[in-house]
Length: 361
Image 1 (cartoon, rainbow, N blue to C red):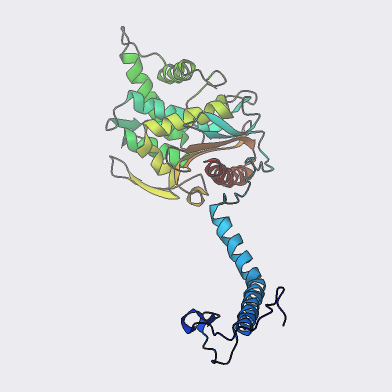
Image 2 (cartoon, rainbow, N blue to C red):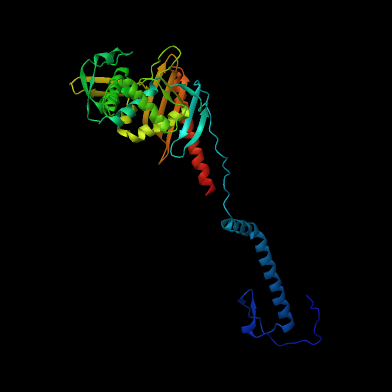
């Protein structure tokens, strides 16, 4: 190979061995190798070394690129799945009115005619039993009079049977006993009448029902009105009690909060009670699906010709997250399926809501 500027004179000197390297390895030329030839050899070796390095770089480029891409992704913000705003999956229900109510937040999660007033039937007993235990000491003795057994229905109570007030109230709620409600209302009404100035007892049941109405009025539940303590129809045109689904969800939640041990009985499929007279009563819960609702805090059924099928339940959906479900004006059987649909729809909705809130943090 010729140099760009070849020397005219031949140089017979040799390159010093300690300065001669090719590709980093020592190169020892023979004594016969001229300096110009040695330079050509070294230059060609350098070119080959450079070409080898470039070729190696090309071959390894995909690996480097992949590595660089992977490294770059570490510093990038993670891709966050976009979660839609939760919407309550409103089910098809037979009830004329219904509500899913968040008690602590005071929010209506779902409503259907929830502000319209409808017959309450035996849901009335929630208000009457709470009123009874607000008047009578829980350990006071209550006697079931023969006249109390004359009210519609037979829950197995005996004339002149004596009960502890708390136990009879629990029995009344679980079995929806009209006899028990009448005996307790009479006892509480009598106590209220005696506490007045003249101490005269006129009509204990009327006095007691009036007390129930004063309580809901003071609470601002304007769509609620009671005509008796049982919720039985007064006539073919007049129910024993009226209220909106929203009013009742508030009333029910407050009653359970005030008397949690009382309403705990309404979460059980069946309960055995023993009166102070020593009689044992095995009663089944009128809420036939009480054991199917998770973390149930309370329940109450209701059914009359005017009301149709009613049901109220309160369950815990998490820390400080009590949810009331009330259905009014359904059928005797569909009240349970209506409430079940709303409970599970509420659970699904609250899970979606929690997932959505977490995505915003």
